[in-house]
Length: 368
Image (cartoon, rainbow, N blue to C red; front, side, top):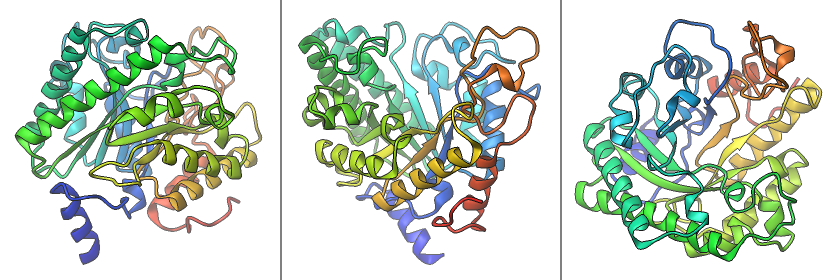
């Protein structure tokens, strides 16, 4: 217990970090735009309570404009003009008061298309990004000082920005898009850096991350975010939305982590342990429950062996309908990327995670 307290206090005061040691502060869950719910609570906090019930203290969600697209159930959102304004709204205020250790926040500056930088980015655009992320980081560092919480601000799967998913995987990204993404990511990071310098991280931490999702493509020699963008950035953390390798084999996933770590510059706070798993999982409709559980088991084990500071499962409730859903959602309407199905039943991975997080199942144990 004393050792854990020393590690926590060291991290909160801004010294270089070791990866969190306690699994509930590492293994977390994504909660985004699902089509079903079970309570009268606002959708964000309903999901947060289920993640806490699972035993995790890490949650990933989104904060930006147009929040009705992501959290419309039981919630009416105003027009969002700033990230600070969004964070001051009751659902987020209630959420950030809950006993989570880390919130990973997918964030975008309001008022711009999330892909705008791929067409070109002006000095004025870069200044705006710096200002937005300075203002939001200053707010988090001030409002949540001495809370013990960590906030990680990241983008969404960056390779779909450079080469949209409807194009062949071998498509080479455009030079303008690459240069735009480098400047965009660095401007966001610079805003976070400035706020940390001026305010300090006093019992609260804010970091910035860049997320990639086609590492295998980079390993095959094609241009993508991992090898064309990341070496020219200076982010605190790098996130891997890992479906392209984790669904194929444990060995390929391990190779991808190693390759990504080689391309991602080390950082002040995390050193060379600054790659985390932003998304992993697989639809229940595509593999057997035993196969799905085994994929999850080896992904968690490989990520822990690697030293990933966060490992974030996609997701709590499924956001992937197979067809337009009419009336009360049914299990068969969805692809099955879930921990809890529309009928309220918890899938086997829920129970596996719950046992892992409670320490009743060793992390190395094979699923039953």
